Image 1 (cartoon, rainbow, N blue to C red):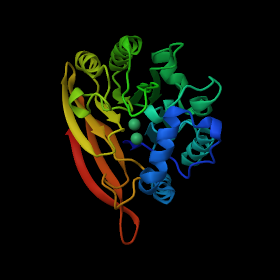
Image 2: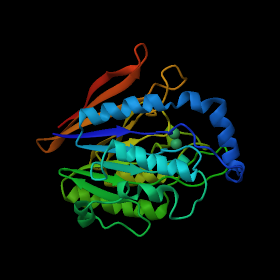
Image 3: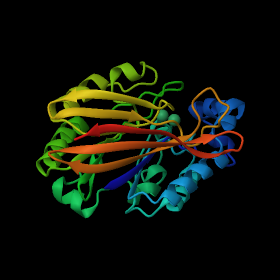
Image 4: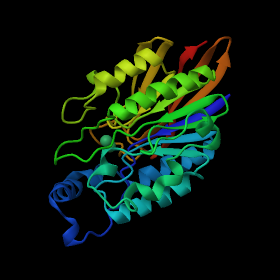
Length: 304
Ligand SMILES: [Fe+2]
Ligand SMILES: [Fe+2]
């Protein structure tokens, strides 16, 4: 059995010291939001509990689906690279960006470039599907499992948290899904924004959710993991190759007493069964009094 951990929406704190010239319009609003409320919601001590729990459970691989930082400050990207390193080496951890990681446009050598070893194909994945010059989608092959990683992160106007995959990535995704299916692998699609149109409105949602859903329906996938909504959701999308299970996970730093569900990560146990797959999910959440991690859910998602 292969074990895959999924966590998302790290929203790393504390906020680094910020220079006046770094407070351009969008950051200014985000900065005010952070100090008015978000810093009480996304807490470092909660993230550290989740991080330690994942490391102790020793999953075969870990997927991080974006929003590692908050305002897109250069120092935040360096600190997030440090946190990733803590989680595990690039061979064991795959990351993709979220809307907060594209908060403002940065120099190509700054920003998510610092996470590059975590955001690229491995040799086995590259043989199945060569990475395009745009970097996404990239494929990592891990035994019987293929991770197909998308970027939905685009810079937007203030108060807009929307995302977009775009036509180039959608075409390449179709190809990557076909090739990994031909290789008889369990296909896991990683995306920050929830992929289905019903899952988020215009201000926060994926602008091309409908078109992405069509690609997924036509080419199939076994599991689609996302973040962004800071909530646990399990949906099923019928596809040409059988049902794709779509799972969103709460933020990995969310405080227990907030409006959104407390921090959680999910572990998937994936094994071949007959011609199909057996997939079980275990949810591990932060609980109050004492503040600690507990197994909050155990669920069989498919059985052959
Ligand atoms: Fe987020
Ligand atoms: Fe997000």
